[in-house]
Length: 342
Image 1 (spheres, helix red, strand yellow):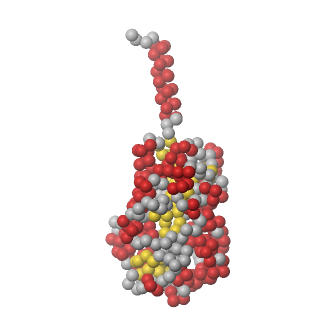
Image 2: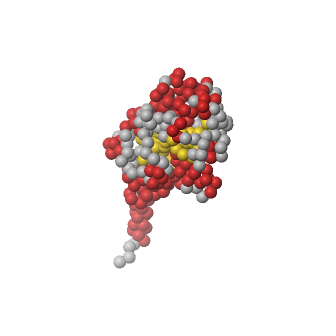
Image 3: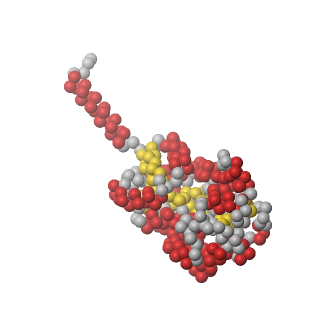
């Protein structure tokens, strides 16, 4: 029996309304990420496949995304903010864009020193910042720790990027916590006097400078070496083969590590889905992907390292609370400026 025309139209309208309501309430989570799309999107797609929750990803410069979050305020669509370095995460927390994480599953997945103050953010992966040395010219038995970078015997032999780099600011902030201001400032002055070239370029440039004989020692994050080892550029692979990793301060506080991390935004609209995503990013599957793809160390301590990370060797990591890297940032920057580190 055919429906009367009016009733048929009403039925079609009801179907359309139901469909639009279903779309409007489809499970989604919105992520602002300072990580490049290629370094985060694949694992987000895995999450969607497993849960059916759509992830809407916006990538960009970390400072620009933070400014956007502040400007958007309560109107922001972002549920999660993901960025790199504890110093940047601290700035975001200070800007008031996060709300505390409350999931026991999430908080218990990661050691407490990798949490932000008041659990406003949590580490997802670790990046070590050791000393790289020229295999052909340096006997690693000559080295002991970060203090060597200021030793006059390495005059004109050290390469490192500028003081406006957050990685170096966080390293200096950690040393401030361990050594105090007087010793750390003397270290920074000694490091500057040992520079083989102006502190310009990125971490890969410092590693390449060691390989080229410009300097014998450099400071860089290990994942840059991983990128060079896996590069399609033969020159990068050759440069990587000429340097070795020395893990500093194994007899004291350990090698400096930092984090990529994530926080739940203050005005998140999809909090359940957001916390499910954080939990997934801390799962064994996602943590192994991070290690294999990004050459970063798992934040979850019992997850097995990738073959490349294992090949670089085991080492003692500094277990300083990540919050100090942010809290000491301003003092570290002033100290670096006084030391002439440009």
